[in-house]
Image 1 (cartoon, rainbow, N blue to C red):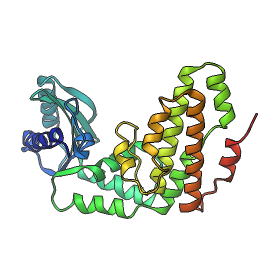
Image 2 (cartoon, rainbow, N blue to C red):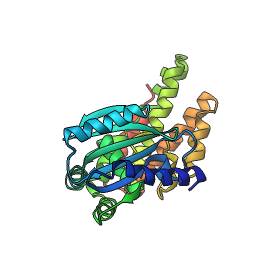
Image 3 (spheres, helix red, strand yellow):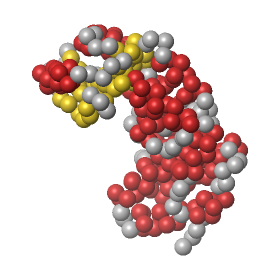
Image 4 (spheres, rainbow, N blue to C red):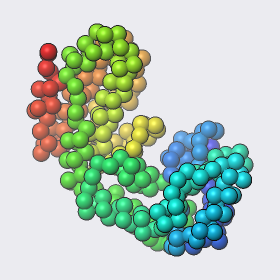
Length: 278
């Protein structure tokens, strides 16, 4: 963990005192600060789980204080949960408030009825990678359970959902062949994102919800193509024909990993589509 992250974690712990009048069951820092690679531009993201839903007057006061600091209200309500941001000592601090039962519901539903809902995955992966600031012996075991009991059904769903790639020849024609630079780069990012989604499933990881900061997730993966991070970074800078060739090589290597580690998911049709020439 770098020095910026350490200092902002200390500030995050102090920030909780702003809400000491509330009945807080647990609180955790998520995002780049919790993962340890924060910099001077990083926000401090904090989730606050409450034992009791805030009164309307308490809710209004939180929003008023946020605006007075130079921040604002994002969305939500006392009943459904809400998010605000403050500026504290010049640093943007985002706070998400909700009743603790919503966190329990999120995790129990994912374990009992898995789904590829990236917003829910973002919330769960944020807690798994987060740092607990306050706990009543409730949050840590809950996080441990959702991480340890990753459903096999979810593995299969994740891999099936993300193993969708257009034919190599078609992508080449529609991007390089047409000189469509925006579509070319959009295709590179989309396909790289799909590979990462497959790898999340193979590694029993909840999806981080976005590509920002995804290297933190990839570095912890046991199952992935060799030199994956270096190779996809080079693809974005390489000559276009060479870049597409390398990217589709990564796709095929990812199919090989599916065959090896999750053989109940067939890659036969996906490989056929990849090799369609016209």
